[in-house]
Length: 423
Ligand SMILES: [Zn+2]
Image (cartoon, rainbow, N blue to C red; front, top):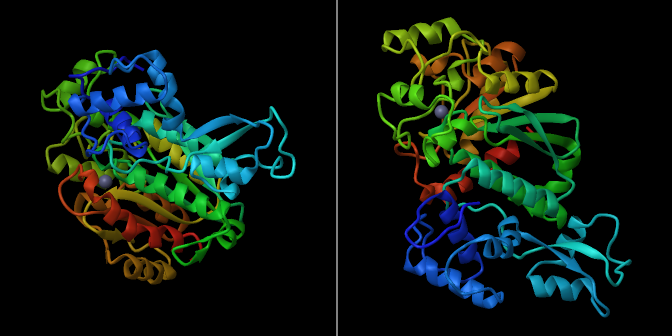
């Protein structure tokens, strides 16, 4: 964590702004610019928590802020405490505190016992640039609040970042959702993270979600989610090219001699388009790229030196092979369209399910054409398993879509994410 002060900009500033906003210190839209209003909000935070009110976020202030970034506190029980009173103080519910402390509450509240207490706000922010670092922190926060979630790592990216998976449910019906093969399409990451949070909250409180009984889904299905397949690419888009990047000079060359990756870069850190690297029509994908003049690493549509040459793709393939997925969704942006087939290999019920997904979301159901119709994750899944696989293109506009589209996108896709787990 670098020291933050007035005049600085970045995704870390934006994350702090979103947190200060949740606490009521900052009421503007998070913009990643540490200006006078942010400084004032930091000063107010520091006053409230007995810190030196200098408006600078150094180690002490950051330490005080971290629990709010993670979304929970470690609370030590004192004489006279009740679960209900603690929940009230934190703006949460007894059921959510019990969920975070399985097996110990509520009858055994002991003085000096330390328990996890979630704050009464969401962990996953949906109004900021959603970086790998933020996702990692959110996964940590969700694991603390909802220890029934299974979290693991399917592999690592070219630069060694973890490709996390989160599993919801324990049922035999396995499905798999993944997001952000393409780095400009990072808005799909908070869509999946928000889904995990909403589902977990409903499940912990025994509530329904959008008309679905979350207990039933939990028992019937196992929903595996890899929210961010391409963390290195997203890092280039949101935080820029770092001098420490081992491909520093190559990346600029591959990016048409530009050091600005924020509106161009879909590939991984080796300049390979991960959704053109699967072993399903890979030769056609490479030929289609060559016809467009793409014969080597670049911002998008380079299929790589060979099928499955990239560690991110090998991780998705390996993860798929060790499971028994009945259906997969690969999240992309944009177009409000669902692609469902691959070279007519999809099974008969794939069209029927695709029509259902279309009708609950309002997205069109289509078959891909041209270069987009080869070597993607859903193509490979259909080819390999002859089971239903879909590419969901969320939102409308030019990538990267503005985060202001988030609420609409989530509302459209929550029914898809729920229905796909039981269909
Ligand atoms: Zn895409």
